[in-house]
Length: 352
Image 1 (cartoon, rainbow, N blue to C red):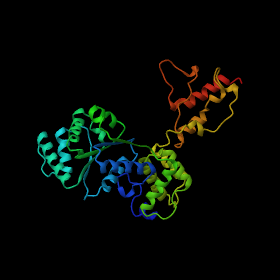
Image 2: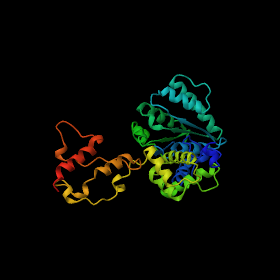
Image 3: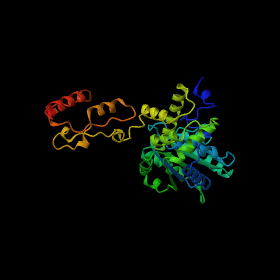
Image 4: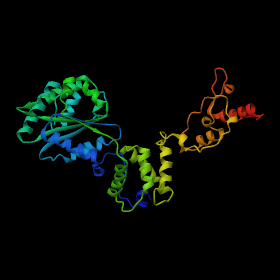
């Protein structure tokens, strides 16, 4: 039995493999989709979709591709996997994606083939749209010049091809390598992370698509999922997938806060939380503090030990070690800090 059977799911709800079936039409993604489709319909030439890692750019690109009907568009999605590509390779790939079966090997010949193909599509009443995912990888001026050259292929008052770049924020620097191309960006769309409410709706949506008809994640768990993921869809997927598997191992039908906390700690998603906020307050006598140090700034040795052992609380660097504990050209490691603190307290305050 897998966790799919245990929770009554038909497919994995939180796979990070792009799947337009799981596309969640959040408010910002709906706006982005509408604007991209407008760019494609009116053949604006060049649009850019910018977002950090894990904000759903690839899923959106596939949704756009799926939404361009074949009777009206000759469309393609080209994913750039590495930066070491030549101008000829790029042009050949675009030609192949647009249906040219045997692209030439020389650049000028490929451009000629592309121009004839684009003219033919225009005469048929079809629009050529090419989506470029991971466009920040095209980080040379020569490649940007090729895109500018292709955008020059047009007929009277009508461009023959439109490109839509999807990339990390660095894609703006990539475009800036060729200032004339940068000036031709007709629309720029920025994707941000999901809100608290959108995160909850996103999880519920993906679970429903996977076949779930019951409440699996508690409200408290959903709040923590947002807290630990910062609203990044990719991190939400990873955290939820781990939580479901852990719930299955524990034979727990409902995913609660404890499971989410444990998985967030295992994944390192809780590292941004200030551990001082989780340390219980303790009254420390003023006589126990070295001269010039406030009592509230002292972290007792037993609390430091608890912090290191507790996976839910990130370790924080200790306050500066008192001068009496420092040795020339040496540092006190975390392994012997507790023992040395105890010795320090005993030697310094044994008369108190």
